[in-house]
Image (tube, rainbow, N blue to C red):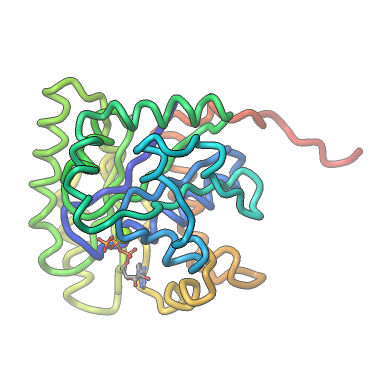
Length: 269
Ligand SMILES: Nc1ncnc2c1ncn2[C@@H]1O[C@H](COP(=O)(O)OP(=O)(O)OP(=O)(O)O)[C@@H](O)[C@H]1O
Ligand SMILES: [Mg+2]
């Protein structure tokens, strides 16, 4: 079961935005996708609908209180399913993180998601590499990390590479599928020079060809509680970026074999 974890050391770099839009783009490409919110802040729910923040989800599943099918929310987009975070008392997060830290609970989730017919699980994580995220990375197949195009962004990349190396030494198979430059402002000197440094220093196989620009339309989409692709018809041009990243991910994650709709689609009856 392929699973893509969106993670970063630094907060506010675009993890939730990227996970939501990639899940939407991959579902639109024919993958039965489950987007799992592992952030105790319930960020996916907050960006979509207040109703979602009241639903049980990942937390209740991990604690063994409810089976997965009862917790998954089917969206109006075929193949796009959500598991919100659920409810946690602030005093309970340490216990919850330690339960996840071994990876066994996430392995159980992947098994159940596979049984339910999902092709792919995408995970939005809290910032940093605490127990929740490291536990998930022990079992996940792939990880993507957004880099915010801002001056201090590159400092946290070294820490991230160390975490991945250390997990792999301990037997994890997780592969860093790439860094995705986010909130890029090509006309702003500081933002552009960070991107330029990334393009110069990083090997091309660790970077996506597409970048996510900073665009106020993202806030508009959060306000409307939808991914950009569903904000209006035709969708704002920036929504296209996630189709490009999703297409690159297909190759990098070897997803094409998992899709059930391969082959030419008939044009006429
Ligand atoms: N490309 C973009 N252009 C404009 N605003 C953006 C863009 N990407 C994200 N944002 C906004 O920036 C804020 C932070 O983004 P997001 O919540 O995706 O980051 P995060 O890495 O998940 O944060 P956290 O570490 O707190 O979980 C949000 O208000 C989001 O709507
Ligand atoms: Mg987030």
